[in-house]
Length: 235
Image (cartoon, rainbow, N blue to C red; front, side, top):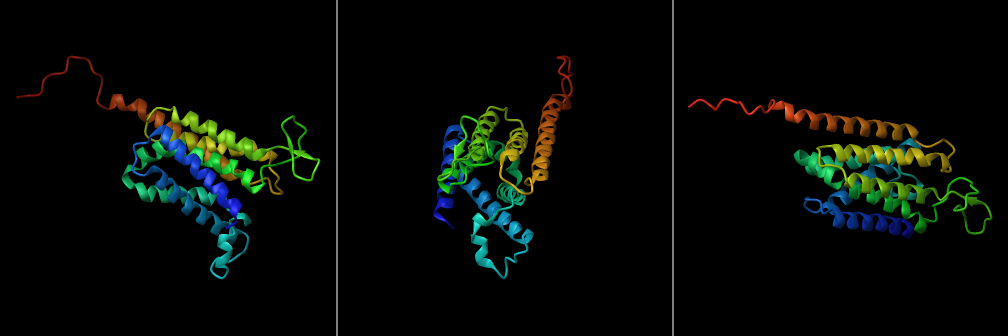
């Protein structure tokens, strides 16, 4: 792994640690949980990218470490979610909601790590804040900085949501996907990016939020209306 990627990963780790310090989630070793899930997701995403590119990870195991060559973000997300689900099991709704802001902060840190990797710039732009790459006079969108700011804002918004089961989790997933959808048009890409992954994430996030809100509204009615005229229990 290149040192620039290590620095980017360290930036993401620092963001997760700071977010956990600020939000104080009632979870045992929250940073370790997120790091473990992210590591599994990174591995799964790298394997998926190799297979999609026609590279056999069994016959080319050393290529797994070349993360810069590509990581499939969709499969990486699924891998991370599966790992977190396995680690928390029955306590998943509470833990995932509590860790959602820190997870978004970690994504913000990873995008901000573009500074170390020299990979912040996107398509050509003449906006006042556009930046030219070293040795070039062509200015471009700092798209990774856009994504970092977007993820940081969503982390703040999610942290302020009520502790309704699955509400923060759904909001985090949906908003992260929206940030990627919004920034994709100014990313340099020949294929347009894995937009269907992002739309799927936004849809799943929205459905989860609606389900969480509906569940919260239905809870009071499960025990019936409180009229003050309930009969005392017999005996």
